[in-house]
Image (tube, rainbow over all chains, first blue to last red; front, side, top):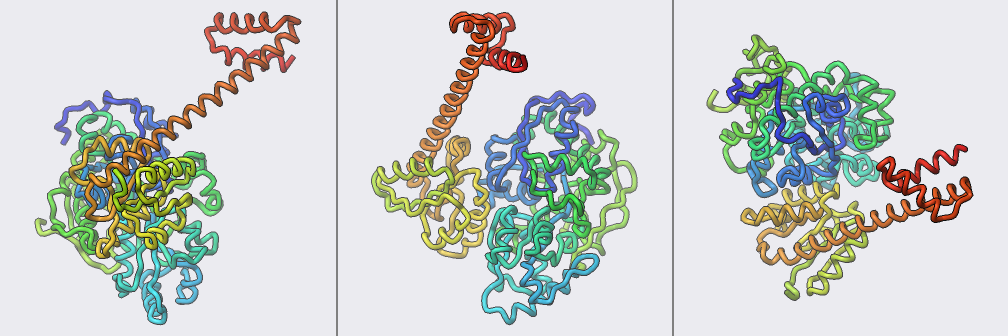
Length: 393
Length: 195
């Protein structure tokens, strides 16, 4: 697998001082941990983390070399390589940093009016969808729903849930808004709901202005959420630095597995450059709402499945953002599975052998063949029970 | 140059900088239709004003709002897209990003009509950056000078010497320790304040 011939135990970074971008969300944790717990330093890297205010600026600054790499929403390297929404710049990812962690939150007043109540385990997403649809027939205006970015898991999860609920996109006005503004927009009645990452759903609930009616995990239980993205050019010019960064990040993800609910993670994330005082209301109830199943490590969590990239392409097509085929060779370039396996191997971790598989419960095998033996993957259910696969399986 | 019939919207919470850009654009005959310092109502304003070009601070959180509008509006008559055309020079884009300028234009607008406007924005953003760093430096120098004055005064009082002698002492300490004058002043103040 490691045909590149680098000694992974003794990488010599071509560049030691790096600037990596992040957006202040709970799932920036792998980058924050890699820095604050010294995993970057262990790899001989001096990393500055730069907080970005929008996904657009993450994309532009990575594309034009002002950032070496960044936390990206999973569809970003794909959209950027295809030139969707901006001039095409070839980007790739070799590491999924987190799965799940988004939710669909409706304004509390609307949820009440529609009769949607949270259950013990959170809301039943199919029931809340039905109730919302029934409520919409009496509503004379379109529903105003916000997502954080047009090419985002949030946007696709929201559309998917609406579709399963029998709510037509024509009944909805989609708008874009930064995560940080969602709570205010809900409170002031400027939006009826949103699909956003954490901590913003929990903060809306705690503040009494919103109610989580479906989670990303319920829409698809194994959705890749944030990835580490770089340009192809940067990857080619800094092969050893790239590997060192990936090692540090994967170690941070592993650290998170046992520290996800720890005080030390809270202390790291509440530092001023990261989430700051924003997360204070979460201190007593825990950073991670259990029903969101936010995951950083284990099984195939960090593996950049090309078949999941294909699913994203399919969603782009559904949303009218992409007209080409879903079975597209660009997937092989964007999702660098070989490099993931190389890094995993150096850390003694098992990784899937296949790049593509059938996604969804009925198609997913309970056991996969891995580079180091049998691998039991994460649960992989779609809300409507479908299977998704490409022809060439 | 001259009025190109294009309307420009400026979105920038640095009011001074926005004023600089607006002034020059107007001097060159462009219409600045709207200058927004807070971006909270950006969506509403873009829909109402329908500018040909939006110049927006690179680091504004509302860029994602604009990008969303550009995608949704593809079916509508006035789509807004990221300024860089496929064949535009990447160095231009890099310069813009470095200066903190991002821009969106309506579909079909030729890059050569947009370029002069962008050039103005980039130049003014850069100028503003320089002004700010100069200001910062002046402020630091002023602070430094105040510290040195204070240390001098304390030395004069403590050693009963005159100003020149006090200054010479500071300079000697700085040379002996190969430290900056201001750092020596700081430690002298610390020591003498404790006494």
